[in-house]
Image 1 (cartoon, rainbow, N blue to C red):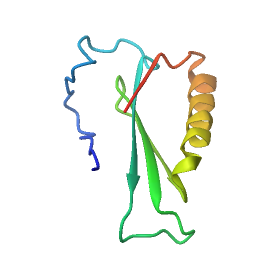
Image 2 (cartoon, one colour):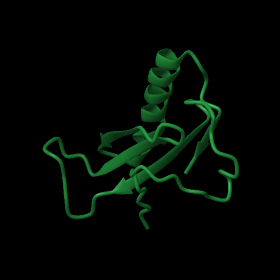
Image 3 (tube, rainbow, N blue to C red):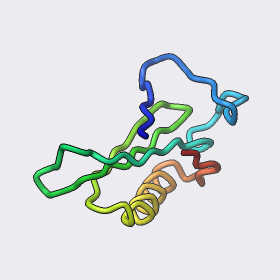
Length: 93
């Protein structure tokens, strides 16, 4: 079952996000989704999405197999930590 995240201007409140985030690398939401009837030109059947809870910035990666998810996360983590000079504190699915 897929979860969809509203990327609009309004903030959400989930059971873990009790207090609003006060920094960019505080909380990252993630989702892995299977594209049932759709395939990209490169034959990719899945996408992984990372959403920063503070800024609502979202980044999407297309992947062929679910087992590529961890490698994609490590790529995302390296990008974010290099750009912000801060470590990701919490990753939530």
